[in-house]
Amino acid sequence: MTGLATAFRALGALAVAGLLAATAAVPSAQARPEPKAPEEFVALSSVDRTILQEMRYTTPHNFTGVPIDGYRQPLCILTRPAAEALHRAQVRLRAQGYSLKVYDCYRPQRAVDHFVRWAKDLDDERMKGEFYPLVDKSRLFADGYIAEKSGHSRGSTVDLTVVRLPAAPTRRYLPGEKLVECYAPQAERFPDNSVDMGTGYDCFDTRSHTDDPRIQGVQRANRQLLKGTLAAEGFVNLPEEWWHFTFKPEPFPTTFFDFPVARRSVAGH
Image (cartoon, rainbow, N blue to C red; front, side, top):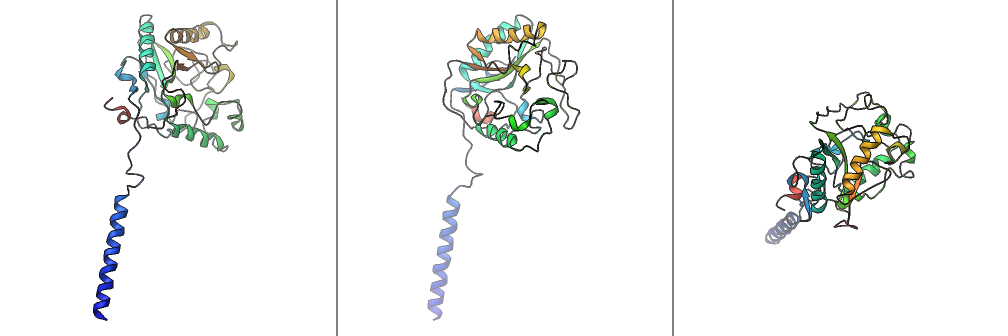
């Protein structure tokens, strides 16, 4: 009996060892490598270092009030044709004493999913006073402000503005500070170093429509400067958002990517 017991114990030990070895051979979710960008994607700074970057979704100063999933570093990533077209537009603007400034470029699908989760949480209205003061949060999907897919995830769409040179720095947003409506006069709303576009970035309001008739004078001229300069280089404006432009033709018109916004996503291209 002693011999049999010893044999069974030995077999049991071998089985456990085998199970542990098999488990170790299966990588955990944390160990799996993050997806990388296709070789057609580049960091905008590798094409034009003079374009200003204020990547809002890496910070809490956005309509959710928290940094957004998938934004690991404050970095603009775009398809190379879109980045090169922005460079051409920048050359034109700098000759007139201006610079482009990007707020958002490629956006991973996980970030869009974060927006969707936030929009469904009707109790979270911490940033309503600035970004959607006149819109009931329950209407964000129906009114088109939030959607389950974004053209940004295809890599050729960019949110941007114009800054007069020399550019003054934009101060840091302090969570919990008093919020001012995004359509308030420029001197009253959050101090962005952009020229006056009539509203702030990501303002969920019809005054953000590029050709809204209430936007006149210098504000309208500034919008037309941005739109005209980018249109000459192949960008198409979204009429509902003065800041939103897509380069055409898109290299990936039907693909929604999910690699993180990080230098390692485009390293070695």
